[in-house]
Each structure stands twice: as C-alpha cells, then as structure tokens.
Amino acid sequence: MNTIEAIYKRRSVKHFDATHKLTQEEENKLFDEPYNTVSAVATAPVSSAPSSPPPNHQGYMQDGYEVSEYPAGSGKWWWKDAQSGTWSEWK
Image (cartoon, rainbow, N blue to C red; front, side):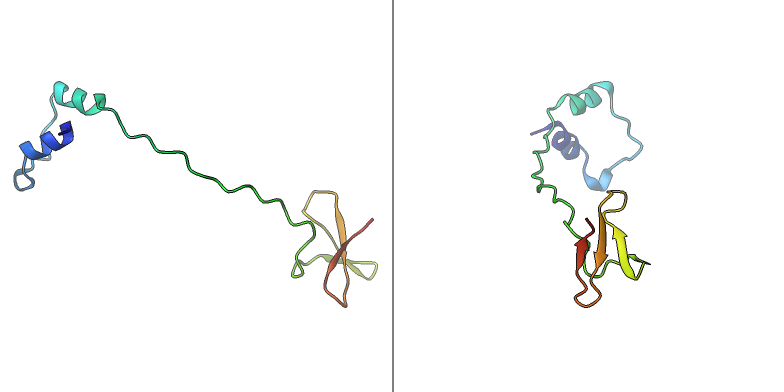
C-alpha cells in the first residue's frame, strides 16, 4: 500500500477535511515515493513540404501567367498551366 492509499484509507471521503494540512513527515512520504515515468512517445517522421504547389494554390498574375514562390521565401518560382491547373517550376 502506498502513502496516498494509506492517507485515503485513514480518512474516509465522508469525513474528508480539506483544511487538514499534512505533517512534514506525511508530506515527505508523498514526495519521496518513486514516481511513474512517462514512456517515450513515438513520433512520426517529419514529412517534407510538397515538391510543388497544390492545384488549389493561388499565385498572382505576371505577364499573362499565374506565378507563385512556393514555399514562400524559398526562392523556388512556379507557373500554373491554365488548361491543366498544374504547377510547373520556373527554370
């Protein structure tokens, strides 16, 4: 039986006194007990960003083409084929 169970059994819920302060000995027993460690959480591999903008991505019009830097700030520029709706890298 651990300390918490012992304290609980000593005080029934019916007679629980929320104002009771633990003695230093009771408090030490509570904090000296080994605690359960949390096991490592399995993580999924970080997926890389899509290689091209998704079809519903909106760029802006430039010289008759819809263009976009994707991902933003990457320096990779794309243009969208108006017929197919697919993005092609601007090289």
